[in-house]
Length: 139
Image (cartoon, rainbow, N blue to C red; front, top):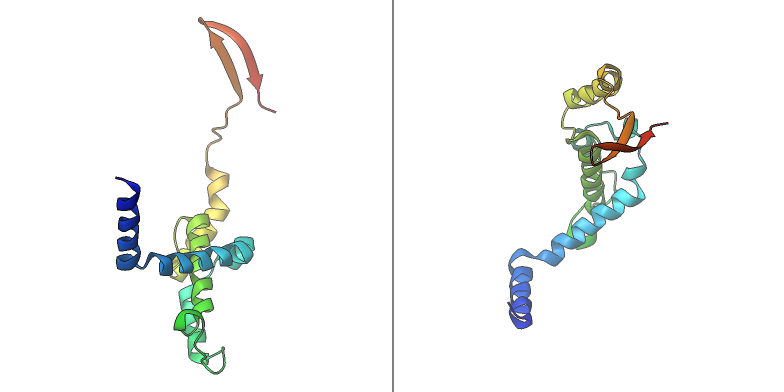
């Protein structure tokens, strides 16, 4: 595919899939992760964000309901929700949708590392022509 065909294909993709819009949202989510949610402790990140939002949404905490970036109300709240959920997915392997999920992550913290077998490598041996050349021991 030559350069002209690639440019044409990119224009079509941008037009059909609104790639720039998605990239803007994903950039904002990444900015939120970098500036806020990445630094949360496990206790701070272990909550059901969707449930929290469903309760606080009724309170109209933003005041007058101004339309924010991209013409949507509560844009930054939703970006922070996505950032929180991405960090949960990264830390716990899933998004916490209910209290049972939060309880399971607590059980994982308490039990997982205590009950697992110790499978660490104690040493590495370099072998050449079936002869031990050097042995490295872990500290």
